[in-house]
Image (cartoon, rainbow, N blue to C red):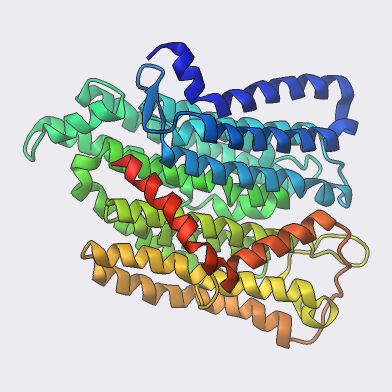
Length: 485
């Protein structure tokens, strides 16, 4: 395939890259006073990249000498990434305007560059493309985590994320070097062929197996799966809330989609080997994410453990290694980003009458009497995250457990259902605080129309009305999953 065809495959990434470079030049000239305009232009660029997904040849074409894969799976994941990134840009001005530090114009550009990296991640057909995309996303994320320069918590979160991220990158690179050494190439097809051509007792088999373990360990850090979750609570709490919303959605989609592609495309012949690792991470994440969240008093830390818990359920969908399982992963991610973004935008609304942000769960006491609309939205998101029917979050778990049962993993499905009860406890505790506790600090009324609209859209999506979208979502997720096989 020539470079013209390859450029056509990566058109969304080219739009975002060129746009980010031009906007950075504008930032250097106009300064922070252009932050809002830069933000709106960035959202427009993300919309243009999403439209480019329609026109790009996504029927399984491979470009750049086999390093870049444009298929329906990548297209579906990129759409979720672009929507999440746009929301993170739109909610930023309301947060920074009421904080001690104004919004800097570089914020939107960093998210665009992270989106380019995430697009490369989900389209990777080569281990080197995987690493370059992951690092481009990570480098932008390190800066975003410490974006509040005057806040020591933000600086601490950025430093922790950087140090642990560098360690995870080293682990990933070591795994890549092992796979390259024992397979003779870095392409996913080459690695899969090497796995297919080895058997137990063959020295090359154990070399490839060690490479598999290290690569999955590096990717587990990016999706915040236990036991590589340690950075998540501190980073989520210390980062600015719009950045936390970004971390909890777009990079999670990219890393989970990348893990699914690597497991199926590159390590498909070794499914039995990586299944054991994924099962352990899934069980450990659902249990620890549920138990550790119970004693939390900070809402952002609680939602961090909630994300760990949800990653466990998403990994359950990957366990079978089937098209139905991959489809359930994408279906769960679609609902998950709506629930998570909605919850964190509600957290943005938690401000005292003096305009100061508060993140303590106790400050939600009596919210139903002072701001009934916000209280109802909080309750919808919490019930949906808990997987309580008839809210749409229940159907995400249903899809994952159905894939497990169809593949014969019904004992694992039963354990997963049992662990979901643990998470329901702390979600219901928040609802109880909102509706039944005596009023605490009265929260200020909302001053952001954009936040209100986004909360309403997310709440309607995860409400029972979301069931009307099941045929359309399943059509997209099934087509995306089949393109992997």
